[in-house]
Image (cartoon, rainbow, N blue to C red; front, side, top):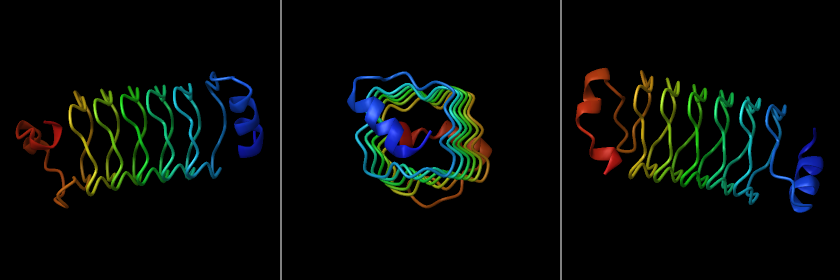
Length: 145
């Protein structure tokens, strides 16, 4: 599906796009609140500055996606693959990131207040303060308050 087709169907009220293939698609700056992109292929998709608040991205494949400045407030990212994703300055307030693979993700200046990273794989991730994630450092939950 192309970005234009997705946006047309979204404008018509459709919200369930589970399993869709949007690899390399540009949805930058789009308002996609409440969309269901569970199990979607979003590899290298451009979702920078997109509003994905309350979106269902459960088990989505977001490898190398651009989510810089995206609004993921209350988003469901359970078991999503966020490996090498760009989340710089993204808003992940109260997002569910349980069991995500966020290895080598870039989260510089991201807002992680209340985000749930239980059982997340964060090795090599760049945290909001610019430090590289060290496995034992999750004990210091400074980023999640």
